[in-house]
Length: 106
Image 1 (cartoon, rainbow, N blue to C red):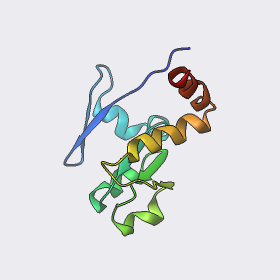
Image 2 (image 1 turned 135 degrees about the vertical axis):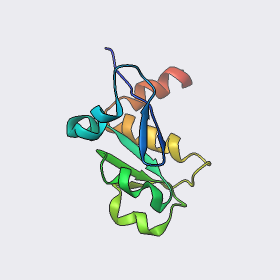
Image 3 (image 1 turned 180 degrees about the vertical axis):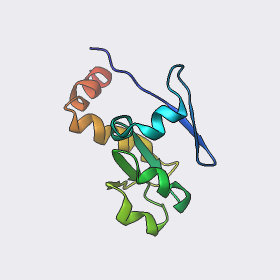
Image 4 (image 1 turned 135 degrees about the horizontal axis):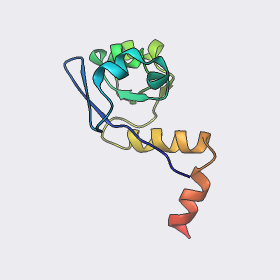
C-alpha cells in the first residue's frame, strides 16, 4: 500500500508546498485537499488554518481560545511529545498502531 504525504510550511498566512506539483492555489481552493490535512497548533495565529483542515489539534499548553476550534487537545505539551501523541491517535484510529508498535517492540 502506498500512502502520499504532503508537507507544507506556513509563513505569514501563505502556504508553501514542499512537494512539486501542488501549488498554494491548489490547496487554498481545494476543500477535498484541505479535508485530508491536519494542523497541530498552539496559539491564536494558528486559528485560520485550524478552521480549514480536516483534523485540528492543539497541544496541551496551547492558548485556551483554541479549545472550541479543535477536534483534539493533546495531553502532552508542545515540545514534550504532543506531535507523537497526535500521530499515535491517528494511527490507532486507522487500526495501524498495534502493528507498528509490534514491529519496534518485537
